Length: 188
Image 1 (cartoon, rainbow, N blue to C red):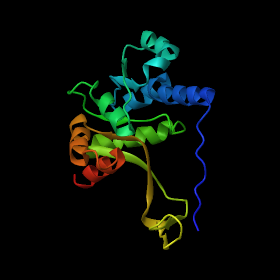
Image 2: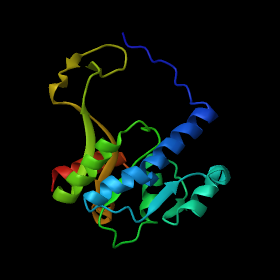
Image 3: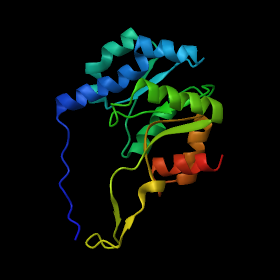
Image 4: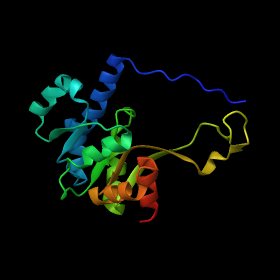
């Protein structure tokens, strides 16, 4: 029998810390220098954040002219779409990263960006560690899914702006952003 555990929201201070960690990843001087060695330059940073929280991060716009705001949407894919619309069309690669995954390392980000530069798109993935069960009714387990071929998809997810937009068009409102991105990558 499967039981659902309650979902708890992060405290305000933890959310604040995680958001800063995600922003620092792309603005930190050392990281930017490493990317420059790979001929990767971060020219725009769009932070998707509700207007009610922007005062706390306003200093970032004064410190870094690459940073602009975008409004969040109802769902994650809506927020990503809003952020994409703030990116110039001539931007060669777009990296989508969220503060839900703040512990990504500079090396992981560099590798994803490097791979996207080489192959046109890339996503950070890690082998699945959790045991995954299938159930058709949410109460009883049908089977255990073999995880040897399963990967957890993390961020950043990197491609061209045009490819992201094709993913949105393909997915419509039925599928998640992650599904559309990974499906489009598999068709390249």
